[in-house]
Image 1 (cartoon, helix red, strand yellow):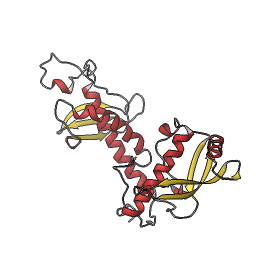
Image 2: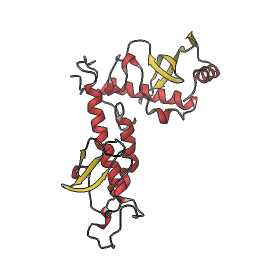
Image 3: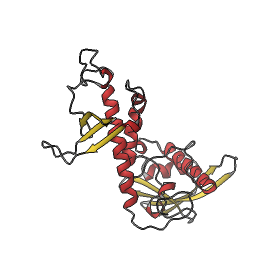
Image 4: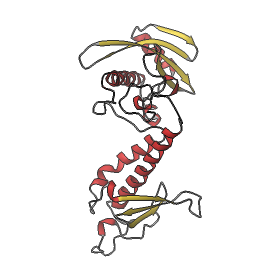
Amino acid sequence: MPKLNDLVAFLHKKKVFIQQVDENTIIFELKFYTDSGDAHIEELEVHAVNNVLRVKATNGRYPNLCPNRHINSGGFFCLGLYEDLKNLSVKEWVRTVQYFLEAQNKCEMNGVWPREDFKEWAHGDGAVYQKKVEQYFDKFKRNDLGLTLEHLKVIESKYSNLNKEKIFHIYANEELILIGNEKKIFNKRHTCICDKHGLKKHKSISKCPNKCSEAVFMVAINDYLLNKAEKEFWESFGKTECCNTMRNCYFK
């Protein structure tokens, strides 16, 4: 992620007027375009907090908090995962903010996040688990048992005896197939799911070259943790008044 000085230098080069509020805060105007080609200008306030750029609009047009519009408390924009943002150049970061403003324009018009045009991440820690699900999902869809997420059930146990980590039991159609923690499978000596009837001389999970069980395991675990994180995220707000700018909202 670019530093504030990088952003200031970039804007100066583009001949954009900057108001320096203090050493860690600037205000400037950014232009973006709607699908119809209309140009809009938004005044933005950028704060440098622990080497992270946080940005919000200054005019009160957007809600002070709306998770469905990916606006965090205080009106600050949620632009994506930090691990993705940290690798952006200053030009890419500014373009990301423009994309976000375009998405907000569509939210105002339609009351829903424009998923077909703009990536939507889960809230809070859920975004991390979502990325893991997406990483393994293509391979998961090709599993030899024809499993879908609807076939899988994850049971969370308290802790393993050795390392105090939570362990998970994964069932497919009520049959236990995998055991592990968030990072790895424990029952690696068991037959891989692609060798259901032992026709391949007991091809174990650890020796399967296609890592079939790993894909099922990672998708099942992280989808479970994603849904759990989403539930905890919304419940953390308690009773919060809805901004009434979106069609559906947990706060309602």
